[in-house]
Every structure is written in C-alpha cells, then in structure tokens.
Length: 146
Image (cartoon, rainbow, N blue to C red):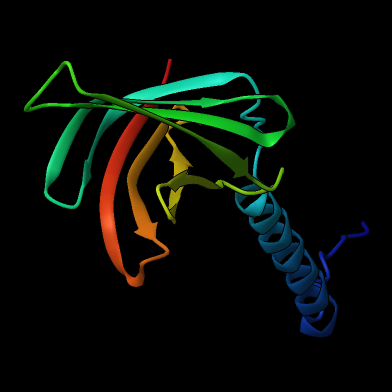
C-alpha cells in the first residue's frame, strides 16, 4: 500500500508569494482611497452663511458659472435690506476637492478657499483672505450645494 505524504512548501517559496499578495493588496487599497471623484462646479449654486471681519451674513450665495465666472452675494444679518453682490472667477482642478474663487471688493481682491466634503455637497470651514492683509483671515464661510 502506497501512502502519500503532503510535502509542505518551503518557506523560500511561500514568503515571496505572501509578499506579492500583500503588496498587491496595499496598492489596490491606496489607489481607491487616493482617487478623487471628478466634480465640476460649473452651473451650480451654493448657499450658506459667512462672516467677513466682524459682520455676519446669511445667506451667502455663490454661483459658479460657465467660463469660470462667479457671482457672490451677501445679505447682512443685522440689516436684511443690505445686499452686496460681487463678480469674479473660480478654479478647481478636476482631480481635487479644493475650490478657490476671487472677487473684487473696492480696491481689494478677496480670495475664498474651501474643500468639498460630504459627497461634493458641502464647503465647510471656508476662509476669506483680502489682498489688503493676505496674512490674516478676513472671514469664514460654510456653504451647501442647492
């Protein structure tokens, strides 16, 4: 009677196979977590609240128009009849969540920066900076896609 004996694989054969599987798994996981879902802001409207220097505004409305044009309007909380509207430009790389827009306010240029979150429906913790004092935040905003 013949008996068969299972011959265990030698560690020299098992280790490279395990290493290959681990590297493949790590690379696959990294690719899926690093990839940004492209999102085009063109022809979208966003609304929320903001603060510029010591004044609160609600609503703050931002329209991202074609050809990278932008319209932003502010309604003062302390005087709802006071509405301020400005035009400017916006930019966002297709593979990024970062949004940057600029508009002229008098002699200064105001830059807004934010990161898209929650499935591209929110811009939370956005910051305004003014060309008059670029090292200090001029304000903040939180917007939601309408």
